[in-house]
Length: 396
Image (tube, rainbow, N blue to C red):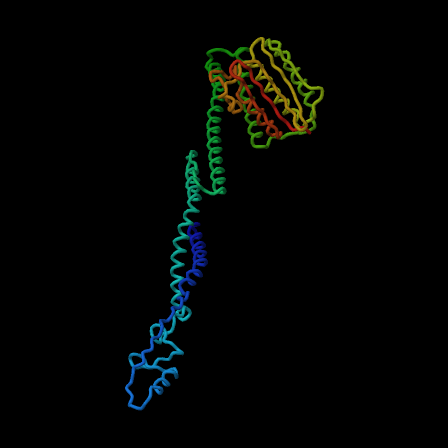
């Protein structure tokens, strides 16, 4: 009784029974149309009468309404005989229990068959969803539900289920890749530290200032990596503390680019700023947006060769402010654009940690901007065509 199709079968069978018993009962008990009685033929047997007796007496008997038939019986012309003799016409209400029982049996049979059939058809998509859910719960995240020629509601349910399964599969892949990337990123500096310290303990060589500086750089990288992972995790979980206040983006851009000007000059890259006369303020955390600009400018300078250009520009509409960082550097192939904000993702797999950064900078940018209720996009015309990153924030 806890099966949905059983419950639906009972309900639908009852509805079938209710809506079919009355028409069937009416059909079964409908009286037969009365048949027209055949004409009565009066055959008056001639009776010999004595001489002198006229036929007027016999005729008088006939005209009185009582005549004799061929068998000698009397025929009443005012009350002709019914078909079948003296049996009454068929009366449906005299056979009410029998006809009602027939109607109930026929309607019940039709109701049960129809109810079970319809309920199984209606419940079949839900059964498929349950089967797919059990499959996903068992660890097979590739399971999907296909419900052809179904209702709009079931189609929406199936699409939502398939999207959830796709998101779970993507999240599982990202988690597995994250664990592999974190272990790889941590293993390299830890291996350097272990090797140098083991050599010092075994008195293979003494640690001089250069080796100590190298060990310090490795420990600093570990601390930075752990800190970035923590910030990224908090931002993605919407738990990153933000001190939102009215912020002038023009002033923030000028401050941040001023810090990178010496580095850009050293790399032989022209760093320019293109800002409108006035920009609307935004509700944002100054330190977090400074970190976003820092990551974007550092990424642009890292991938722009000598003689290139990095441009920071801003634009504003009635309700939105956009801020872009564009370079004329290496560019990104189209197949990498959709993954460029993933953790530890590098468009060039051969790029080392020393030359390619930690691989978390752009992921942190995306997480911080989304925590502010904004969005960030990346676009590139291809290799050697440069890249542009654009941030969109709501104007206050």
